[in-house]
Length: 305
Ligand code: G3H
Ligand code: 13P
Ligand code: ZN
Image 1 (cartoon, protein in one colour):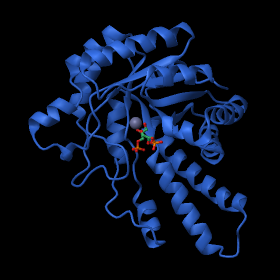
Image 2 (image 1 turned 45 degrees about the vertical axis):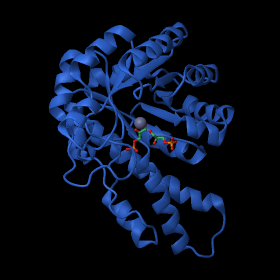
Image 3 (image 1 turned 90 degrees about the vertical axis):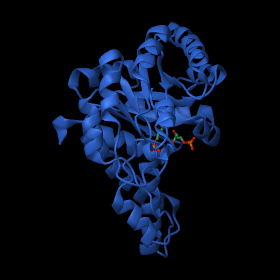
Image 4 (image 1 turned 180 degrees about the vertical axis):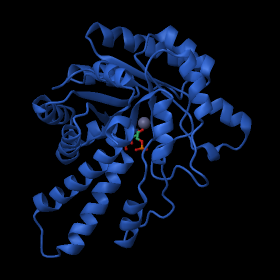
């Protein structure tokens, strides 16, 4: 069934686990994500970026997610990921998104507060959940100085003020993750102490972006099959488990599903050189995406492992 992200996050809070938000832009990703959630009997958030909406078309993407989500025997939220403007957020709400992120994290604090507050006012009037972001995502070792690091990672006192002043339902925090497949050069580590400090001051569910694990077997597999993604590195499962213990309740992953798709397609085509039926090629991709999604769902749910 399709529901709001607020309802799903309340389940996560009660159960002491984190919910996965997986990005989709097509039928295959959507089916594989929902199948993984059904198999693990876990609520799931289907996230769509503005680029994904441009790629698939807003009406089409909404119908695809609603079509699979409404039939699913588990709660599914359709979420706008990194909405950059009021227009983008309102359009998503108009087309049936049950949750929106307004990402003004690249703007000064007061501007971020102002636009987030506006989005909260509009979205809450129609029962839509709102996520916002404070701090900038950048890998921990990408900071050139301690001062720069302090300026980019989420400040716990600012987080408290931001949540109080905006009335937002969930807050994305910067604690050392970054988007994409190349997150760490050295030891992959999150700023868990900072997370604890934020948790102590903030009473809404916390969200971790840029949280793909970038599984070694997928990276190696892709490279062995002719790809070139050397040096790709993600967030280890154990760091995610620690983050969940410290109050992270929503964990975003897009890159892992892209890697699963690419690996499966490369492998299938190599093993089946005579096949040219897209349905067969994409079915193998769905199986691999589902496998990777199930692994992630279990990492975030201590009771399932
Ligand atoms: O947070 C970023 C997501 O991975 C979305 O990426 O804008 O290329 O769809 P995208
Ligand atoms: P990854 O690039 O680590 O998958 O992060 C995705 C994300 O944060 C989407 O909002
Ligand atoms: Zn993100």
